[in-house]
Image 1 (tube, one colour):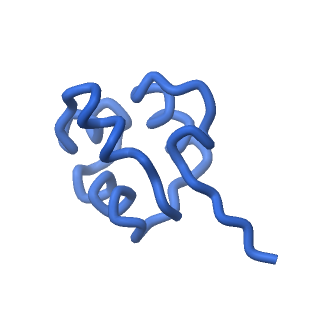
Image 2 (spheres, rainbow, N blue to C red):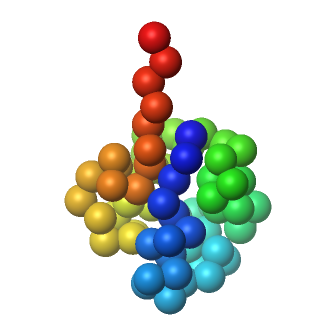
Length: 67
């Protein structure tokens, strides 16, 4: 799953560690999310969306539907 986490994190001036601390996960989890190697739980996606001051999960996470 592609994300805009890195872009929005830079805009807010947060490091991966700061975002991880705020979301209650490890820096490695944030790195994996930014590099599309991990799909977050709905709760984690929601937390990150709010920390990055976005309204909708879809603003941060690019959900590609497979049919």
